[in-house]
View: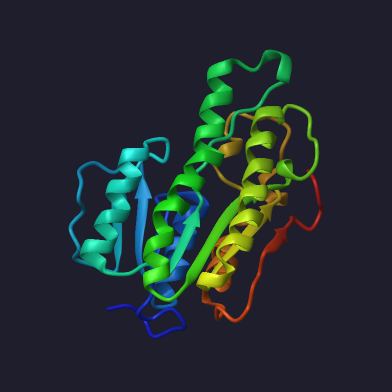
Length: 235
């Protein structure tokens, strides 16, 4: 059974929830009492078995049909949706002049179109539940120009604008959208990049706690923009 907490009786979906920031967020939501559906491309088999308070479900956010199938399953088997955390994302870095067209498509489809399609699928369930929260995890690269972040930054800039539009469009339905701008977080996105000290970055577990805190706020509070940075600023 979930722990007593501000999210007891609530249902959350976290994309990319099997590792890094996503997994930290899943754990923090569950600790606050939520029933969590954590998605990942790495999970095999669908539909998942409902036998515990955290369920891992297969989902590729680039697959529109898979998104529809997952949220239909949530509605039919779980019965409600209160929180969506659009966390699944890809990082590909390099000069614009050397960025392949398939890299542009992959980043835009995963970091921008995926969250848009997941949000679209979540909205009817949230409306039926009387409201909810959509939390989109963005990047400082979507707010300021950083070298070798052309495609990645563009995808994250689009996510920020998407969040702002959703916040406006869904206010009347009691659905609050928050865009969380993240500075450097110590995850595997840095595995192939040299010259960055992960000890100076944000801890994924702290990010997960803060995201779960946003999810726990009453819907009478609109937190539309939150920025989390390492103490040293841009690395």
